Length: 336
Image (cartoon, rainbow, N blue to C red; front, side, top):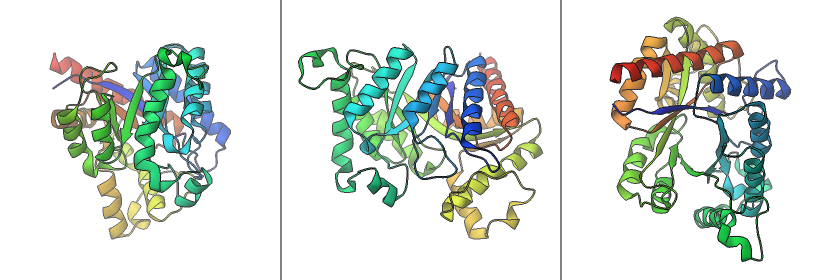
């Protein structure tokens, strides 16, 4: 089994009975905790028009998290690039990299991160996304290059800075693009697992070495809920299940506390839909997490596992990430 890094994906979840200010403080607390546990990176994802997720101004929140930590890499998982001007993103991340040298990642996706009406309010043109997204990535690379100093339009700050870029995907389209551009690839297995294996195969088979990367680098994002006992972990996971039920029902309310029995909430059809979407969700005590990590890695052989955790109680969320670190360390000892 190949060794792998572990990282954190945070959606800045807003919980029932809590404020957005509370959410941001919890995100910072989690980042500090992850840094102490030697997680590799802490990413935040762009979403809009959702009461349950507060990471809409992603670049601003990245600055807040980076300012409150010391060494962990902080970045976007991701910026939904067609929502923005390439120049504005180059300037924003150039500013972040100038403030926090050597710690900023720029993960890029093509999805809207919202509904159709809000996407329209953001100025997206859905008919152009497949052409716009690849072109914008090349524009960013140009703005970040030293060679752009003689251009009429320049990213200041941003120009000449080494800001790693990652292509995000939830289908096979971006796997081809990441391979063609020779960039690292991150897949959203935490909510769109259906094409993950195929996407990884495409990326590996078609990868073209570049000045940015000489061999494929894969990040898989999964859901994780760990606790001292299996029973506690499964109860805690009902917050995640309820969140996905709300997606199915188009109800964007804040995250709910755990419940004793999900059968009181979901229908058999909803249960089937949610469990299908959450097939790569690691729930259990430390020994169960170890087995699931090992099984996943033996199948997918990724370079990095990014863990997203919807746990209502903040302290238990911190403890969950501690258990994942212990499980990962135990696997490393076992492998050696």
